[in-house]
Amino acid sequence: QVQLVESGGGLVQAGGSLRLSCAASGRTFSTYAMGWFRQAPGKEREFVAAIHWSGGSTNDAEYAESVKGRFTISRDNAKRTVWMQMNSLKPEDTAVYYCAASGSLYARIDEYDYWGQGTQVTVSS
View 1: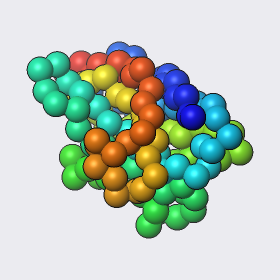
View 2: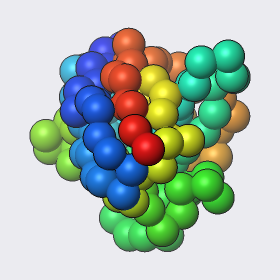
View 3: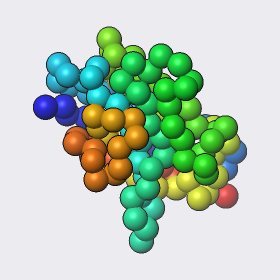
């Protein structure tokens, strides 16, 4: 079992930055790939970024095209935490952001086993 709690959301102006955190509990955290997803009002939940269980290099992460070059996912297994640094934020980034745990870096959204409760990110124009 893995429990996930997100934090760090808030209101920011376009062009600004936020850093989301996801704190995990459970002894098996380090064996899971971790992902960030988001869901805007009236839209389906979508993939944002994911990182391999080891988090050892940039090759061990995947990003949605819409956030490449702006968002960076990272993790520290000793701290049982995964972060997402979000820079150059746009109004279209406004959504509830969720972290999730999966057995695979390339898992589909329905293959993620554990989810947090989400944190709201609002980007004003």
